[in-house]
Image (cartoon, rainbow, N blue to C red; front, top):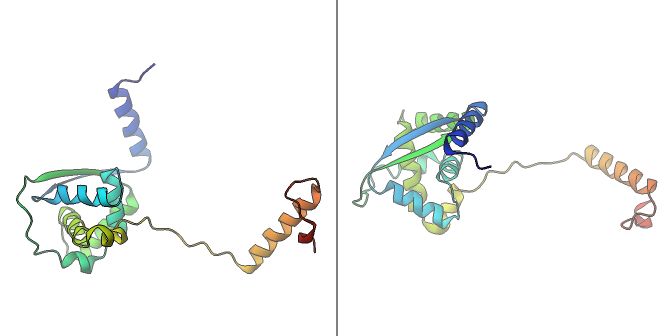
Length: 167
C-alpha cells in the first residue's frame, strides 16, 4: 500500500530531527541558482543539497572572497533550500567568520560564484567528496596477515588457499 505525501513528509522530518539537520533558506541574487544548476550538471550531482554541502566542506574562503565584486547576469532572484547537519553548519559559520562575519546567504553565493568561475573542470575541486586517509601501522598489518594465515590453515580445501603463503 502506497504511503501518502503527508506521512512521507512526517517520516522524513523525524529522520532529519534525529540526525540534527537544520533547514537553511537563502534568497540569492540573480543568476546564482542557474550557476548552481551548471555546477551540478558539470559535476554530475543530482541533489542541490549535496552540491551545497560539498561546496561548504571544500570551501576556500580566500578564493571565494575574490568573487565578491562579480557582476551577475540578469535573471530572477532565486531561493535555495537545503538541509545541513551540525558539522556542515559549523563549517559554514567558520567560513562566514573568516569572511569578516558574512551572512550564510552571502557565503553560499560566494562559494557558488567561486566554483562556477573555475569552469567545468576547475569546479571539480570544490565539489569533490572529502575522503579520510586510512593508514595502518606495521603492527596492525602484521596482526591482520597473521590472522588471515591462521584462517587459511584452518580450511586447506579453500579454493583460494595457496601453500606458498604459509612460510
